[in-house]
Length: 177
Image (cartoon, rainbow, N blue to C red; front, side, top):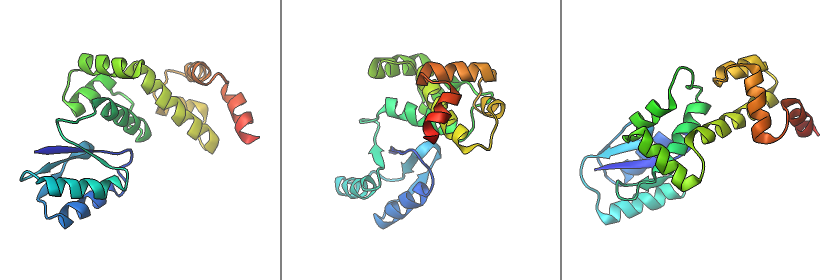
């Protein structure tokens, strides 16, 4: 049986999952993308115990029956942007490969549940990352544009203004006050 563990950060999560599964006496293997494979089926009692333990850390267990694909899309997009793995990648290929569904299916599902497109969500996540990076003052706008796959600084600036309603300069002045 396969279970997906949904979380935003992998830092120390694998260790936490490992410790919890060992304490429950479960044979398992941790795969990529927050998924584990359990060798034997879990009893209701084991599943409830593991779920309660991990839930206290904000980690949710999903089975194929209760899978939240929209949440998985959001996590994949955020992870892709925050890990800096977005250059030369097609978001459609990444999501299809990671989640095991065709991109048209994922796109339609996402739009129907969130009332926005995956592409718009991707832009919002990148703009949030831009906000973080411009406040750090250790990267130029051209480096940020390049790292976040904007075609140019003007393209980055236009997207920033479109999403936030502010220019980058206005945003920096506002944040410094």
